[in-house]
Length: 408
Image (cartoon, rainbow, N blue to C red; front, top):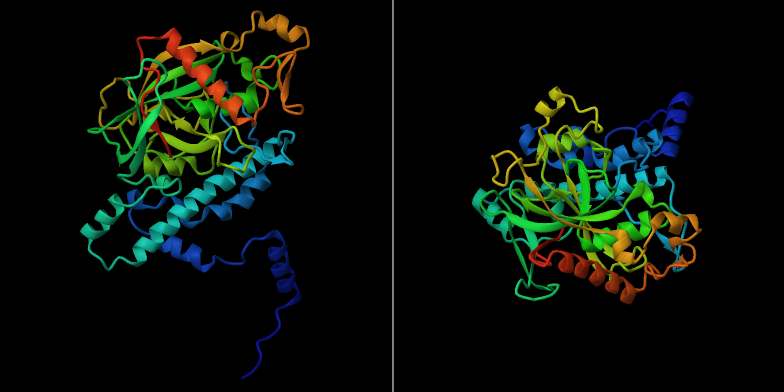
């Protein structure tokens, strides 16, 4: 058999260049498989197979574009915690580094979802009823929760509502969230004194909010985005959750946002985070969540949302407490606590002018201030958690201190 001819010099250079850049010369087997799976009707398209490409193939493109992950909207929650070296916090990453980590994290979630979807499709010899039964009885983990298909069981931690003081979680259940079986939870948001519609924003539970405050807000004086208060929101969900997406000035900033809305609608997004430990460790900390609330015209920044865009992309917010069949969640205000009152600062302007600092990430302590000392000291973190929970309970005694917690 004759040997295959050597490629021309230009071809060899092209292959070498592709190898150096890391881009495959042609779609690999998994990409072709994904494209075939996406050949069906649009509503059934798995989120990983958007436009016949896998998220990891888009990662290099996103890095080259250098899209900034700088957060300009008040109270934006970062996607991925910054790592630490040798037990000491390292300086904050640049915007490009955060964007790359954000893309990688979302790509990992969607990649795992598609892997499971393809595996399930390849073994489709069983009946449709058996497939449905196995799906509804499966144990839901953080990764499988990202699927956000028609019906996804959601883990709900029920709180002790009979306690006179701050309640503690008692039981964990897994069930479906729908218009007929909604779920109501507390969410929190760090915000300035400016009020605006609570949609196309990121929120958190109590632990997730403390992580954000400790890592992004109180490390400068004045605080980032002039944040002055913690809002508590009573949010009722009428649809299953999907993976968390970041919002910046009212616009979704993760890749392929439009495809997410087209294939999955506008449900609440969710992502786990842990407060009180050094990343990437998870054990021993206070497990928290970050949430995303997609609203009207999520592809445009605030102030540029035209009537045509709003009509084409109505978002997931319900204008009334009762769902209309198309919306995903309803938000009600449930109180607020000012950070100065929480931490004991009498005059914040004078505090900053005197050269004080609430928290210095280099020394792991404040400057003439101690409330935020010990970012990874779990005892102090739990104390701050209880202090904030108690502050809401004391200010609003007629409202429950805690209600069910949505985990992802």
